[in-house]
Length: 395
Ligand SMILES: *Cc1c(COP(=O)(O)O)cnc(C)c1O
Image (cartoon, rainbow, N blue to C red; front, side, top):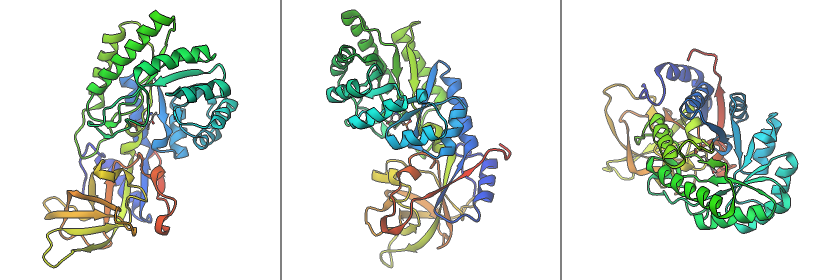
């Protein structure tokens, strides 16, 4: 059983199998070396940008520390994320409060801790910022509806129309804040690179009109996340994204490129994780049913919430996979007493016909939005455990 090389190298796979052999399932094994390589690649492709890791993707302290060491900054969404990051000795100057939905007292908390960079997308939030984080830099998030081509869209809930962004940036100045730029997020696992073109064009329009009409000079574009991790559905290589996005930026901004911020989450940590699960039960719903139901010790509530609507289709490998082995379609489901705890039913995975209770299934590319998304104990199943497989072995 060897997964395709674009998900994990043969050497890393062997090392992972060895490392995970005696671990209790379900669990996620994270290879920090993969994160290191992902970060270096991203840096290489976007040398003109500053990176703010979206901590929510995987808040494991060891991952955050590694990225801090490599020079990353951090996109934070709550007091608790902030406390965790600061507790690792990371300075508040490297933090952006990127959540547009925040309590006034949480803003005060961030300000007191030294954070001076904030996202907003509404008047009320902007007033809270002026009152609780005076003099801070503020960027406004614009609404991008790119939901049809993103596998995990972030549209509707966040951002405002560019016309409102225009008003908010003027209001920010008038309230004594520093209007510094525009942000957007084209949707997570965004497979259509053209979405950045549209977002950058809207941003350029705001830069120009605020300069001309109001003498407000914006200096920063926060391009959010959206770069893909490798799953079963094909995506362009990161080099492709980088080349296209650089072209859009040059087309719109020429030599006068503002400061560029990237907030990668999924693309930095996604392929660093492999989730190990065990088959609890295999059954059929009647004697002649064609499909087997394969029930696992992992499901929607303890790590695989992004299988909602079968949005993210992880590559799955079983301990019975051998070249040329006979396979048949299955329905994959989790262990809890909730009928929504079905992972894949429409999309049929194929697994070996001699798969048995007690065999292991490995979900590849599960380093992002898994452990941090698990319930605290639905049906008593504890949150999934993460093990860090440290670099140091051969790579
Ligand atoms: C979640 C999030 C990100 C990370 O997005 P990915 O698609 O995982 O890279 C970046 N910025 C903001 C504001 C986010 O909410």
